[in-house]
Amino acid sequence: MITLDRLTKRYGDKTAVSDLSFEIKPGKVTGFLGPNGAGKSTTMRMIVGLDAPTSGRALLRGKRYEELRHPLREVGALLDARAGHPGRSAYHHLLGMARSNGIPASRVAEVLETVGLTEVAKKRIGSFSLGMGQRLGIAAALLGDPKVLLFDEPVNGLDPDGVRWVRELMRSLAAEGRTIFVSSHLMSEMQETADHLLVIGRGKIIADAPIEEVIAGSSLTAVRVRTPQPDVLRRQLLESGLRVEPGADSAPDELLVVGGTLEEIGDLAFHHRVPIHELSMRKASLEQAYMELTAASVEYGSPALAQVTEAPDHQKA
Amino acid sequence: MTTTATAPKLVGPVKGGGFKGAVAFEWTKFWSVRATWWNLTVGLLLTVGFAAMVGASADASAKKGVDVTMPAPHHASQAFLISQLAIVVLATLALTSEYSSGSIRTTLQSVPKRGRMLRCKTLVIGAVVVAAGFVFSLLGTLVAAPLMGEHGDYTGGQLLGTALGAGVYLGLLAVMAIGLGTVLRSAAGTITTLIMVLLALPQLMGVVGAKWLETASDYMPSVAGTVLLTQDSDPYGGGVALLVLVLWALAAYVAGSAVLRRRDA
Ligand SMILES: Nc1ncnc2c1ncn2[C@@H]1O[C@H](COP(=O)(O)OP(=O)(O)OP(=O)(O)O)[C@@H](O)[C@H]1O
Ligand SMILES: [Mg+2]
Image (spheres, each protein chain N blue to C red):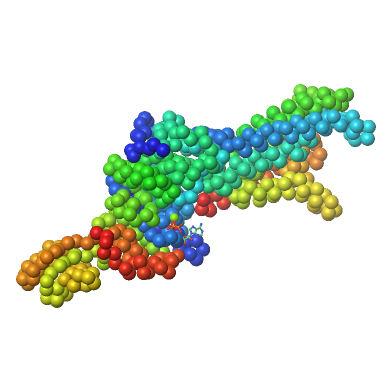
């Protein structure tokens, strides 16, 4: 369990993290999303005590990171930047960490095995590829068998096989009751990995909700209705306070209803004796939901981004 | 790459860590990079090499009227004028490479109590350097003395005294380098500053001609170091020399730990 209590970080006059209060609960994968520069890495660095908050606190089971007696046994963290001396071998990198926290040396070989680096254990870290470096970081995070794990963009640089492995690893770690806090820009990956989402923009919380709720909240999540009397149904739907959008141009009998459930709309049509030919849920993707949520807080965006958020994608279910 | 999607469990009692763990951590880090071995080797070769040169030229120096009547260990210890730089580089890199490589993040995640981290790092590096200085000095004298011929006499006390002085001087120099490195976080900046303080400044202060500058230059670390190496009593004795060096080291260390506590890693 990680508790962020009014966590704030300013660098000069730039506020990187602003008054963040949040609880990251055990037994779940909590996804940490937000545009570049939103403050994700800064928040994670503050949790492990590398950066001091300007105000507020980050607590781990009620304690500050510095107060943990064997920190690596309680919190494992893969941060975004390089974390090893290029001239040191992967084995010695982990061995030093193990010794610092009273972890038996035999554990080093175990975690190297878990991440698939056994063969290069004695190689210098400087010779590692990006993905191998990420694997070493994951091994370091797992070293102390901690209850809390932080991963800042863990799949960065991993091959497809590695990406799938990380997804399964996170799921299984969460299933064991651990607290998993993971940031990523890969929405399709997040959609399959995360249970809960914390979305921030410009250092502030934009959304804090279960992933289904975030997706359901998107304007692109809609109920699709096909009916021979679209005009009649539209009037009734509008009267009951729902938002109605026309369907695809090629399908004049189609309506897209935002904000209602299948049951509500089905019952309404039945009540007004409007025949229904199709009634189906069209779920937004996490990417679409995310784009809408953060559209206003993208700091370093490309000009084309706005169009992507506006164009509804009918293909995606 | 074969991986497993479940992490193995860590079983057994939770013990260790703390201060001892932090020392073991620093020890492991120190010996697992090549720079350590390089610098110790270079330090040894420079000490022995220059001691041999000083020894071999003792006769010629004597004929030119240079005073070579001092005991061989003191004579040979002139080599530390050069070889101390290898120790400065060794201690500086052990600290600044943590910042340049980003490993400081791993270090502070493993040992988040920053004061403890710096104490343990200083302890490990300091202890190794004291031992290295002692051994370098012994070997330097043993190589130089036979080359000095009739000038090569010394007593066991002088041999040990100089070796001890070398260990203490270099050890405190290493502490200075660690402290300054923690403040500056840059190898180039730290090494340049220390070369200025050790070699350039004492010379410059002497040539300006101002009396107070000359007096001040007596309290530069390399001057105090020479007193320790040669058991001299000019400009002051060993006790004062030790105090001067401890103050220099302490000042750098205190500054370093203040910065370490305050600044983000
Ligand atoms: N050491 C620092 N000094 C000054 N500003 C900083 C520092 N670290 C981060 N920042 C600023 O704080 C803000 C948040 O940065 P942070 O790295 O936390 O973002 P992020 O959400 O991790 O972004 P990304 O998705 O690109 O990794 C940015 O505007 C960044 O420029
Ligand atoms: Mg980041």
